Image (cartoon, rainbow, N blue to C red):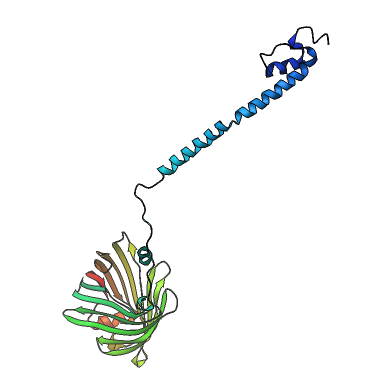
Length: 313
């Protein structure tokens, strides 16, 4: 007790609490000093707690936030008011559909393609040539028409017409069968069957076998490919070969590989439907077919410069 009454405030830990609670409080008897210090500290806590949660401060804080919220909501409103939806708006967006008004595309389509319609200048004269294809039908069943021929010296040297039924067997291939009628150099009818379509790497391929009168059988195969330099400038290589099973001297046909044609045609597509072209074609006969051509005074090989147009509709 003597130590606490010696007049040194720093020696009593309770004196620190008392000074923190009431800095201006006068000295009191030591018997009540400890309790008064704790009481002052508690009182100071209660005063601080009530002061921090004063009703006026709380309402002011909420009021400020409400005002800020109202200001933000007002700035989000569009400058032009959006009109309310009406029954006329709903009717325009969701019209009533009649069953008969839901029309579908016709399952029957047609196409006519003149793949080659050209004039040529060869080592032994000038002439014209054509190759055309047409079809009518749907995705699975079609009627095909194919024709090709040549003119030289003002007269038609060869011409034929094929009428074929085609059935799609895969997404890329058709089986075809029908008849072929030759008009030049002489009339002759052939039965025809074969395959045509798009081979891997985008090669267009056609292979057809023909069975004619007298037991003659011919196989004609053709392959072509489009090399696109641009979307409009296209180079088309083409190879065509004809093989016969029997000799027919009177027709100038020998057994085996009889004729091979290779060509390059460069076309420019002003539109997908219209494309003029120029090209170079080499044609050669082989085997007995070449012998028969020489005997008749013809030529076994020929190189042509061609110019023409490719059109379809």
